[in-house]
Length: 468
Ligand SMILES: [Zn+2]
Ligand SMILES: [Zn+2]
Ligand SMILES: [Zn+2]
Image (tube, rainbow, N blue to C red; front, side, top):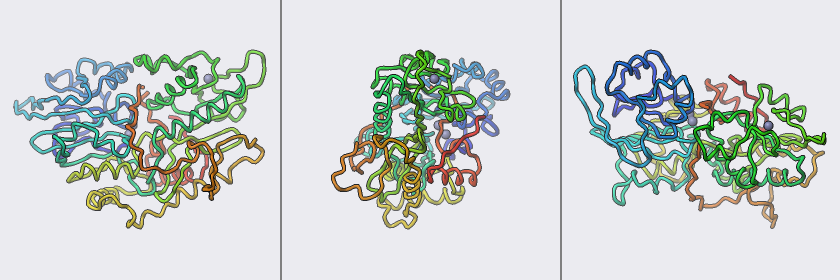
């Protein structure tokens, strides 16, 4: 969860992803994406008044973010003050002090962030140098080298500072399986289940938040079906998503919510209460997208873990892993790195120190003694103990039990070979509620709460979140 205060040292007259306190004085605003930890103050009455009296103050964001924001009536007053910008097209903005008339020009370029629909990074170029604000992002290793606007000719631009989504900026989160690998694991699990009979049904236990659309569209496409959701309202501005979601309960894939989801599921009921028309009991499994991470010494990783008789956790991450962040930083080699998220169990001071170290130390983490990864070990150990022994062993998704080398041909999505060629560009997620998707850090404001949560996740325990 972002703790960025809104201002960059180099260009302190603009504010990003924070709209309260001193940010009320800013000459321009930038919104990286529609998650509420990046929208503090955005509907505040003081800001609203300021806009009414200003000729030049605007909010810059992507076209998708604009649509998502304006789809909520509380933000409708922004309509005439939003300037949506195209991706990868540098735009000059004049920052005007409306009392003195003094002005400063700044060029801003939106770069894809691969985090949720409409999410972008902002590259600023002006008199104080080039500065990159990442917002929340997930780029695969090697992606930075393919972003044209980070280069001038064939060389990387000189970057003065990066304001970084440091959610997983900790060696414990060395590796998070790529988006494609996670998706394939989920597709396989869902396919194996729903193909057994029309009464085999899957419930995707994910929040109503922008960020899961990528999952819905891919499932819909693969199985030629639609995903049951409670309401289409959050997708109404996204035709490309709308065709994959439905409010008709007669489908085998559900992502519907109910205030008492967890209870419902215990009783083998779907949150929407759907039952088969001929009275045959439905056989339901739940899949909870969660972030899973692995140490750099792990050769193989599981992307699906069975957590109960009919529940699974599937890897899904909206943020770059430690190794992806290292790759990104060592490619761009900024002079300064400012982390905007405090990773679990770290203090702000620690976080501000670590990145400086990384930019200097290059790409080989092996000499770093912090790299002994205990979480990954406890993750697979615990979850194997967790396996419900009365379950049919036709299920392919058993966590590995060690010694998997000898020609064991399990589906690759289940135990993924570590490979160096994870270079495919991550597909940017298409589409939509400002709630923060269920990443471990998202709902836990205090560091001690965070560490507890992470410990639970690491040990394979189910973490039930309180709804707000
Ligand atoms: Zn965030
Ligand atoms: Zn976010
Ligand atoms: Zn449903």
